Structure formats: C-alpha cells, structure tokens
Amino acid sequence: MTELNVKRQALVNTADQFLLDIYGGLSQPQKSLPCKYFYDEKGSELFDQICQTDEYYHTRTELKILDDILPTVAGMIGPYVDILEFGSGAGIKIRKLINALEHPRSYTPIDISEEILLSSSHALQQEYPELEVHPVVADYLSPIELPASFADETAHRKLVFFPGSTISNFDMPDAIHFLKHIRSLLSPGDALLIGVDLVKPVPRLLAAYNDRQGVTAAFNLNLLHRIKATYDTDLNVDNFWHHALYNAEKHRIEMHLVSRVAQTVTIQGQSFVFKERETIHTENSYKFSIEGFRMMALNAGFDSTECFTDDANLFSVHFLTAT
Ligand SMILES: C[S@@+](CC[C@H](N)C(=O)[O-])C[C@H]1O[C@@H](n2cnc3c(N)ncnc32)[C@H](O)[C@@H]1O
Image (tube, rainbow, N blue to C red; front, side, top):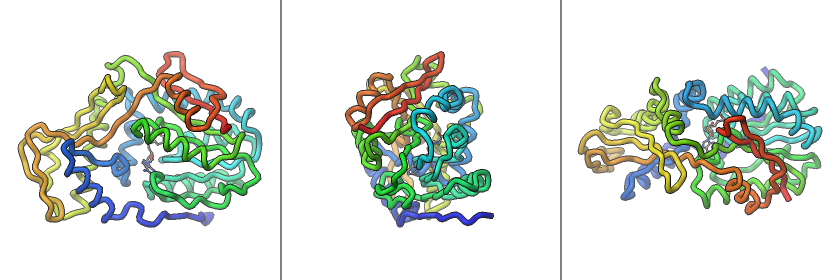
C-alpha cells in the first residue's frame, strides 16, 4: 500500500479538550455540546447511513447537481489544480470532482474523524496513484499548518471544496468568518466550490432530521455514548431522546437531546442538574436563500461566478472565485 504523508494537528480529539468543552457547554443556561464531537468512528458511520435515508435529500441532490455541473466547473478552473477539502468524511463527492478535472495535482482532505479520513485517503491514493494525497487530521476551527502542496507559494491554481452544506453548522458571524478564512488561503482567481442547503417547506425539513429508521436519532445520541465511553460517569443514555425542530426566526433546524426526567449527571466528578424536558442543544443547520448566501460570499471576498441548483430547488452548489 502506498505510504501516505499524514499531518496531525496537536490536541485534536484529546480527551482533555473534549472534557473542557463538555463542562463549558453543560454549564450554560441553555446546555449545549459542540457538533464536531458527533464524529468519532461510530458517528461518522452513522452520518454515512443518514446520507442514505429516504428523507435526507441533501446528499442525493448534491451528487446529482455535481454530475450535471462538474464538466462546466472543470472548464472554469482549468488543469493542474491543487484541491483542499474541509470535512471530507467518506470522500464520496471528491471522486466526481477528481474524475472531472484535468490532471488535478494534489488533494488535501481535512477532517476531525481520523479513522474515516485515513481509510478514505488510502483508498483514494490507490485509485489515483498520480494524485498527491495529503490528509490532515485536524479541527478546522483551529489554526492548521497546511501541507506544502497547498501553501501560499504554490504556482498552481487552488480549489477549495466544501460540500455537504457543512457551512450550515456555523452560526452566521462564524460562517462569514470561516469563508474569510478560506479566502485567506487563496489568491485572486482561485476558487471555492461549496454546497449550501436551501430554505424549503418545513415538513420536508423536519422529515429529513427525523428519519423513520431513527438513524439521525442514533447519530445525535451517539454523542452521549461517546461521553460514556470516554469518562467516568453515571450518564444513562436512555434518559435522553432526540428532538429536531425548525426555528423559523433563525431559518435553522436545531437538534437537541431532551432529558426524559429530572436528573443529575456526574461526569469525572462534576455534576450537572437537568430538569425534566430540559435540552442539550447539539447542532444547528441553517437554511439559505441563494441571494442570502451570495451576499455572505461577497462579504468574504468572493465573486459569485455561478450558482447551480436542482429542479426542485432543494440544494445549491456555488462556484465562487476569489477576488
Ligand atoms: C456534515 S458531514 C459532511 C461530510 C461530507 N463532506 C459530505 O459532503 O457528505 C461533516 C464532516 O465534517 C467533519 N467535521 C465536522 N466538524 C469538524 C471540525 N471542526 N474540524 C474538522 N472536521 C470536522 C466531520 O467529521 C464530517 O466528516
């Protein structure tokens, strides 16, 4: 098997940082936990299963859009490009991009979930021996030292790929901040190809985050299983249930874990009191209009070159050029 040159960001996924974030989140008036902790090995598997449920339109729709547009995108970006992907996961969409591009030079996938990142990077390197694959195990919310293939000095055109509407998990100011961060990695003329979920009737949204098989519920509850597996705790996962709701004022789906009973949970000696029906807020997924997202991209230093959608306007893929 070809050896991969893997970079690991210090402190990523450490038990200490996780514990600090648990203590911080559960001490707030509205208890919360950062959604990045969904993605241990089990959580990444569950996310892949979510993508295959009937209700989760995102993945199917984005893949279809990519099939339709990638020849056009490849023409706009040109040959010998260096690609960087944030939150690459199982690496399904990148194959479509690589197949469409003319002689892509390098691929830098960044993900917090080490097992899935390394297994998908190995598979990709085997399939595309000419492509330089440089996986980075990192929390992309922290500063990351990037491989030389994607450094400022590279003479080649750069393309950042950010599919799956992962940008929806950021609160608005953080989303603009992250787009600005992406822009700072690029030179004028480089590009960002980003998948963005669209506003739509609420029943369709609620169904997508409350699938009948209960996979999204298992994904949400896995966060508690992860805490239980990592720390000394009397946490009883069965005392919580999954709840997804639409916050119309903020245009976002919210996922919560609801306490079935009044209870005290102790984690590594620190106790947290829950009232009956009190929730832990675990994830937001913002829904955008095309114009609204364009304005954000403009604000972050991108020109909105093209925006592609499906016939039912469920999902959008924006091709943005750094100005
Ligand atoms: C919603 S999934 C999208 C996966 C894939 N890009 C897709 O389009 O299907 C989010 C991905 O981002 C990764 N991720 C989430 N938060 C992260 C963080 N703070 N740093 C690095 N990776 C993160 C997860 O492990 C997961 O693979």
